[in-house]
Length: 195
Length: 195
DNA sequence: TCAGGTTGTAATCGGTTGATTACTTAGACA
DNA sequence: TGTCTAAGTAATCAACCGATTACAACCTGA
Figure 1 (cartoon, rainbow over the protein chains, first blue to last red):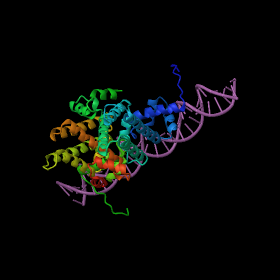
Figure 2 (figure 1 turned 45 degrees about the vertical axis):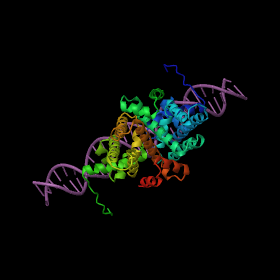
Figure 3 (figure 1 turned 120 degrees about the vertical axis):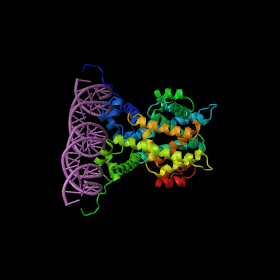
Figure 4 (figure 1 turned 180 degrees about the vertical axis):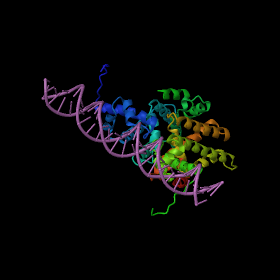
């Protein structure tokens, strides 16, 4: 070879994590069926064969990405709940959710997971994940069902405008809508989404 | 042939409509990348080749399905706005949106369209459709941005629980959440979704 | 140092999919 | 009735994708 790039080897556990991170981004951008294991491999800097062998199958990898995404939300929400601010718990939860935008792929992967409820393998994972989050904000944050539902609804709207990339639009109506969706701070939304 | 089923021919315009109806259902269930033109053809009762030839490509067909779905929402909302009830316009809009559940595929196709904002061909269609609906409920229904945003958020939650099929769950938390999402009438939600 | 397990890839295979082509057949109308 | 157009399909193709296999290179420790 002309270049001296010595392929860096990683222990299996670290490589696993790096594949999961890459897969989260690619699945978030293209969805489950639209993403290919080769795109994920390229994003992770390894071969397609190794991606498949590490997780056994594309489906298994997607399910693991889904579980991680739900786990990240749980962690962020629990941290927000236990924080001691002068803000309300709903405000803290909303802040925590918006901060997740910075980690490209999490919210978008979730959006795709939730849209595949009909799939026999992925559907149960999506339902369980969604209910887990619902129970968390209802039981641990103490929100009554109506407020919990409203909070989830706002989250789904954030997912949607994020997927549509309305925050990059120059349409004034789009910006007005995104501003409403993120609770007023359009600049922060944009900065987080820009990564 | 043993059966006498004489293949019924339809004029191109009618056949087009029947393909669009079938495609709406299949795309709604499986998403854009996950659906195949053969599944759509089978659902429409014709050959795969004819589906492709009628619309030129799978992508063109999907875009047309998307435009139709947005058009259906526009029609339903305009009708709700001009209706003269004792209810508020938001209540009428919410009712109109819920009624759209009965036409399997519309809301689920929309969910998939909105999740593909990154796609160079589909993204612009999704953005334009979403903004069209936003402007409709803001300008024609007269909702201030905050209320319009909240209304859209509730719609996105409905799309999500519909895609996840939480309304068919026997989990009490799922039912509580769906009940909240649809404004209290779980029975009607279920009946509409059952088709 | 060299043996063996671990990390990683090149090559390839079977199955699927969207699209194209060449061909049929139904039906309207002169 | 015969003809011509529009509706529709069977067959096939090239591209793609996930998965498998066989193999290479790296690193550790006895």
